[in-house]
Length: 330
Image 1 (cartoon, rainbow, N blue to C red):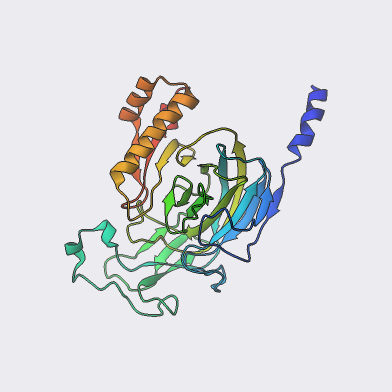
Image 2 (tube, rainbow, N blue to C red):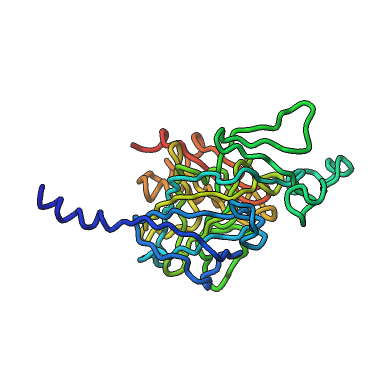
């Protein structure tokens, strides 16, 4: 046993922690962007993201709207057909304010229900000088809460417990396609899934050498579906560890948390059919259960049929299918 430990310990020590601060931010999941940092499987990265409008933790303009991304991170050994698993060890708010859209988007409503109810614009400069359609939320870092600063409701305090998450997490998309940071797809991207938070592991397919991971679009809080078109947009401190899964051949993003395994039918948000994303997520879950959990296809179908739970990831965009870990084969 002593000899075995001696052989193993040098490999254990190879894992490193990298503190990475970007000075340039990109607005697309494009394999042609210069690499921010090279990391190895098992390494941990401590970094920061700026908000969807390009403002950093001090409120200074550091990138361009919308959804400027920190990255790309190049994972040594990652090749097309592999997958990378990003474990979000720590995701914390680092600024005392955020902002949201002023009203629900037409993608969330029937147009006739909003017409004439109240205007889309609130007032120019309420948060940043160039915008009149967003409102400010105060973030209490000590109490981990968000509270709407104005307008003030006569009947509701509009204060909630924060639940930090990343709206953008993705790799460089396949081929020569460099999708903007405003949409999502099989590569991840701007999924705006409120389960991409501390303690979750996001699993993404690899299309280019190194995978080329990008992160951004931090939210202090967001409801299912992102119905206003925003979360509580803010900057974020993020610590993550990356593992490499060789020849995984994934077709869609997957996520694991303490309670569930989750298949994500990731599509461009606010522009895509939810019924198609349900099919993508469900088909991927069948594949996952059959290949990784050795279930018979018919058993996978019935497990999904009676234990599955669907999440609206983004309104008119993506859906996710979760299976409780308690219901999985032992």
